[in-house]
Image (tube, rainbow, N blue to C red):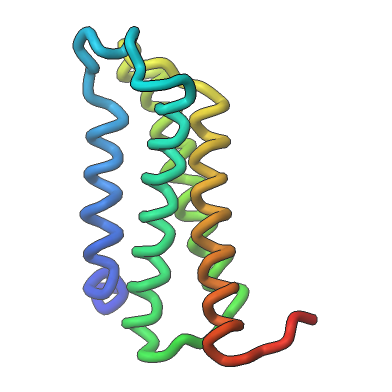
Length: 131
């Protein structure tokens, strides 16, 4: 367990940063977004980077780029849990923030982008054919 966490330090740090940024109160600027949908883009970016860090840690732990469906499922479950947990915290604890299904959807779009990138780059690197 400690060995796994040692390689996931970037993902752990990033998760804490995302948790803090998603739950701190925004003073005065919440009514004036930079553009429509900016919040959703930020959620997508947060979770794309988190997914990349989780894959990076797993690659460092294995010392290889092996392709395993269980790794993808574990990373998906971790990110779904974190994204859902943040929205539940916003709904119940941090009531000054709004919990939205679209935020969770944006989180999952970022995760999907990260997983797709990993699969695509893995197949490109090892010249595997799509089945």
